[in-house]
Image (cartoon, rainbow, N blue to C red; front, side):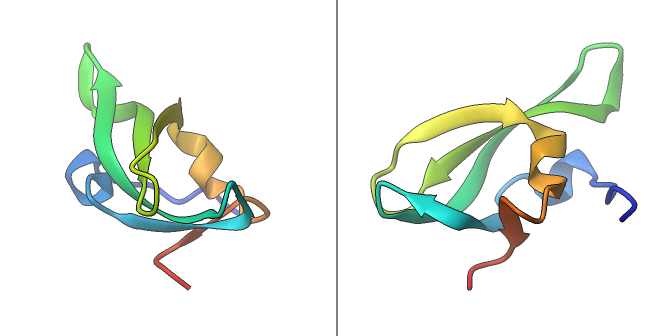
Length: 75
């Protein structure tokens, strides 16, 4: 499957569902988008916040394209 292209402003505050929840954390919101300092359109990392626990973690933005791990929206 081709990788989906995201605009940094559209990715910020987007909602995601973990396919395999851990620690009862299933629903997440993107709370920060880190872009390349040389190209503001090129996303490097995203910080997700778990809705249940408010825990934050950062990952490479392309990890969200892995449909075995993440789905867009809340199921």
